[in-house]
Image 1 (tube, rainbow, N blue to C red):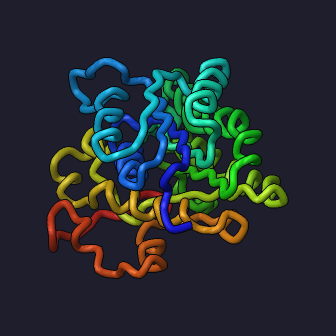
Image 2 (image 1 turned 30 degrees about the vertical axis):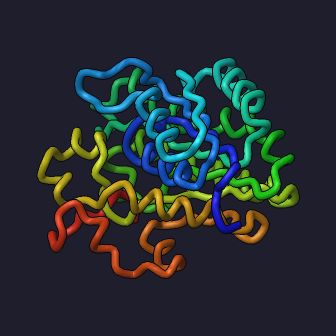
Length: 272
């Protein structure tokens, strides 16, 4: 595939950050975007809603279907998928982007936050993929992309924030299992993770302005995702991609334009 023109992309959690950047990159090609996120009304601390991103999609030449959805609720997922199929005729690409984070140790992780992370990271990924599979099997070059890290069972990645790590690895285990399960059907299932921290609301919450300045822009993840989603699905599945390695495959080795602060040292992300 050379581009995503006319393809229908179903994405969770795309009202800001990496999800929004992936959406806008696809919209430039004239893709159809089913944008599912919880933020329908403006948030006092966070930029972006499904409606503001839908406007951006259409300004770039794409078609938008904004849907307010709780990604933990299988009935809402089923309704959103059905509405997307009714509107655009199918689903070609699923991006499981929605995620919840809390970097606390076992003693300081309330069970309510534990349940949120497993609900959004693991359950939502599984349930949304399950709902999209029948439509993906009917698509010409179907892809599922999880925003999750390579599996690395070293204790150092679990000790500081065991619950969060387990939940993100749960997404990656979906990649491991579903890529093999769906290989015979020609449905690609891959993961993508950043080498460095990415300047998003979550990173700002964790490290403030200093960490934001030591990060890369979300556009590097969008460009990496675009490369993955335009590959032959039958030849590109079961991979745990890292953004800078993907950009090298795409022929881009100078990544300086993605830095929030050109020339500043970059902070590595978790799990790598």
